[in-house]
Amino acid sequence: MKYIECTIVTYAQIILDNAKQHIYNSHMNCSINQIAEYLGISRNTVSKAINGKPGVSEETRKKILATASEMKYRQYILEYSEKEKEVKHLGSIIFLTKASSQSGFWLKVMDGINKGLEGSGYTLVLGIITEDEILQGKLPTILNDKSIKGIILVEVCNAAICTKIVNLGFPVVTVDMPPAENEINKIMDVITMENKENIKKLIRHLYDKGKRRFSFAGNLNSFNVSDGIIKRYEAFTETLSALSLEEEKAYSFTKETQEQFSNNNYLVQKIRGMKNPPEVYICGNDSTALQLMHAFTFCGYSIPRDIAFAGFDDIPDASDSLPPLTTIRIPKELLGECTAFAILSKIKDPARPRLFMEANTELILRDST
Image (tube, rainbow, N blue to C red; front, side, top):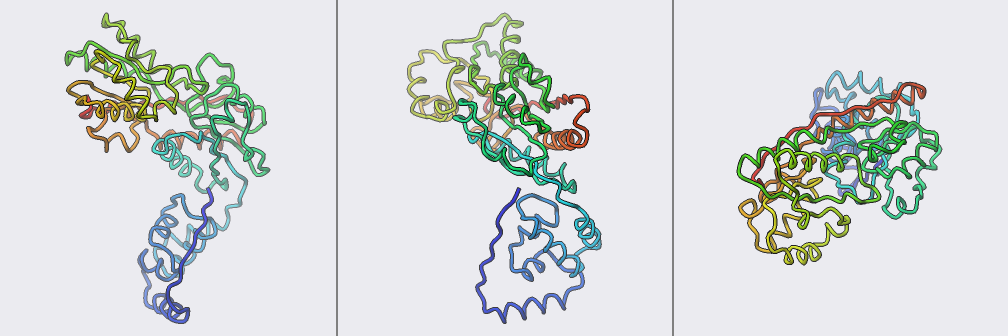
């Protein structure tokens, strides 16, 4: 990804130049702060560049590494800087995601991809596709970029739009995928997560605590519904059936759009019409769970005394909510690293067999249950 760096100079240039020269002459083993002061940029920018983190333009990063080498920050910096000079820019890999995607999820995936692409010569570029574009079958203009060598899809699970993207002829890797029955899944590389076992484990745990009335929240009919959400619902219904229970469908939220889940007034109105809400909501993702928790709390319900909630993903907001949200943790950075491996190997050998990787998940019990 490319970012624009800017520096605000607040002192006379001659004073700044003298200060820089003093720093340069005075330190054989300098600190990050001293490199930042010498270059007149933030410490955070220097730290990102030295540690290989995203968020720094290529030009700025090379300048920082060269300066760190000259000022003898660490010996490895010289070696790293020399290696960087040898890396040629081979093209761009587009990270294509929905405009409404939850940043807490896909930014972590992106961190893993950046780590996996480090030193490869490929630049990760963020691309956004809107829900209107998905509905109308339109591809974003960024996919016309002549530098593209591969495409990574995150939370883009509409089979028709995925087919159009694959037909562009680039190597394509998707994180999660369209519903399993779609033929396009047999063509794309798929990096996904195990979606069922911890849902089953959680429901049995709550059953053992005396819970008997369960509902589900998550749009199962969306034009962009993912295989992951469908499998989570399958695990939900399969476990209830095994326990001789039935879903409280009258209180489930399985047809709401993202806009409705984000509309507190809509949720509050629907909740106020409920005569006897369920004891537990199992939600397709953390965002849905947090939005419902907020609406039920607004309506006077106590969580988890009146209703327990659980999500999926373990986005940062899950642990910060009141109460903290029980969830199922996806190893997001690991998904990103596996995705980087898949796209690089596909670019190198387009004819290689299709890859399907599935990462285990982890049940995280918190106060919302």
